[in-house]
Length: 82
Length: 82
Image (cartoon, rainbow over all chains, first blue to last red; front, top):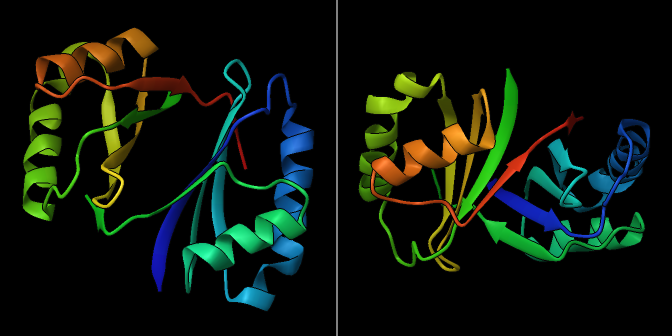
């Protein structure tokens, strides 16, 4: 299974609770595309969120985020990890 | 200790070995600033590298990367993690 990092902009000032809700919305439907969102990190000052996931394709990761109501601005396949 | 995600552009087509060397250069000097680079992920197609670290400040993370020869393009403090 490939690994992905996706990036969201626009989460300025978002709280821990709001991020948890967004993450829960992903987890609720992710299995339908064989995706799993392992971790999400937020920098509320810049509004950036980074999500680490595994799945069959970038498109599957993108679709889950769209259906959960928070489309990703970037999705990167992480071919190398150290 | 705070947690950071930094992003590098320009690693187009970089190999696993080259990423390991860059990561090793960070690890060799990181302790001088109380920084620890836990993980680095590369998307060789977009040339983006994401580095997850802990440390005392964004500036400390930035300095280690600069001294290791690969300045970060962005450094984000990850105030929230789910």
